[in-house]
Image (tube, rainbow, N blue to C red; front, side, top):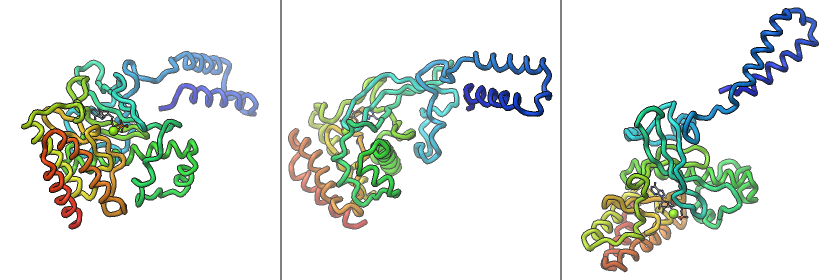
Length: 310
Ligand SMILES: Nc1ncnc2c1ncn2[C@@H]1O[C@H](COP(=O)(O)OP(=O)(O)OP(=O)(O)O)[C@@H](O)[C@H]1O
Ligand SMILES: [Mg+2]
């Protein structure tokens, strides 16, 4: 959308040009006066082209088709041009990203949905220790990106934040399509990933680590963890940072979060090690609560066998 200032500038420069041009007689004094009045009116229009309500216009249409979630789209996803996004608050500030609670609403209607917005940091607080091992075999396509990342320049930090966001969005899409229990990925724009909010109303679902399941629930959650790991392994991925802090429990369902560092089991030489560690990190939480150690060993063996026959 052309901004007022663009219009105004070009208008003025035309006017300036006209004064010196030999065609300066083209416009009568009245016309000049009328143009001048039009320009003044335009200058007085509100500067702000922001939404009438909310914190920003919905960014839905700013994302390209490939930057949106898989079809068929759940019916709760709001794609209206007139929708606005409200930032309701911070859900969690993390090491590399902050998670916000966003409401997308259509003004004048009762249509609204709450989503989680994960925004990767581009600034100096970001930690890059994580990057080396995980990204082995991924490759930065443009060598300028790679060099900048190595130097940790501002450009590099911005690029890296966008890459983490893209990696998470991509992983969410693949996992969602394969039936791994993850939030539905709504869209990605730059460093921001918008996804399904797992919770009730504005209250986020508790992390697995915060739950106190009874025996039956524990058995069910362990079963679900095994199933999620089987599906990821079949896809050829290890989560890379699976833990009772990166999984939440909602309505008895275990949902896996935090996927930017997914590891390709075959391209990454440490792929199997990451898988083993994932199972161990989650498994030890379960064994501490009563799941037999043998079950964890069995799952390790099963997944190894599964990964060995792509
Ligand atoms: N889609 C979601 N629905 C509900 N809660 C979420 C969602 N995404 C993230 N959260 C909450 O925010 C926390 C942080 O999310 P996530 O683990 O993806 O980010 P992070 O920056 O990696 O955090 P950390 O550094 O603590 O691991 C999660 O543990 C969870 O409590
Ligand atoms: Mg996390």
